[in-house]
Figure 1: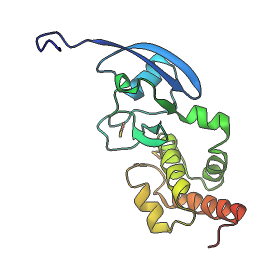
Figure 2: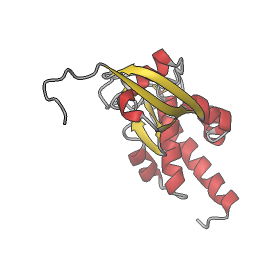
Figure 3: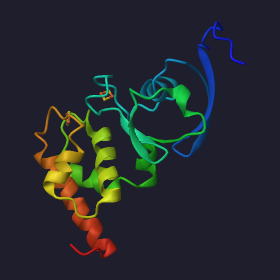
Length: 171
Ligand code: FES
Ligand code: FES
């Protein structure tokens, strides 16, 4: 039976996979995933912007879904499979999107870019031919203060078209 008066444990032991590698850690109960990755594991590709779930800079992948790293507690992730932009860069899963972002000048300072790439990849994983409006809707939770979004939408649309053609998906 749980003792209601027992102090909440400040430290939690977790075992998870990050970018395909096993990680064992003891984390503060209030440690957010983005801070765990950046400060404890040195994976600084996920950015902390608003830290309130608004800007999308911290977007990354947990168990196949995109999440806000600033709204997810590391202590929740025992047994989870976490991927950051570093890991998906190494696997090549984002290579076509990254190349097209560069070609289209879809980044300037780059602060939003890792989160934007995750949102774009999430869209394209479930939608072979998104319209420009659907692309805009899907990335609407990722703020970019530099580009005006047009080049980002161009890049995602181009990759969608190329992937669909390669997979033989009719337009
Ligand atoms: Fe997480 Fe802004 S830092 S949404
Ligand atoms: Fe600077 Fe998007 S490229 S915030």
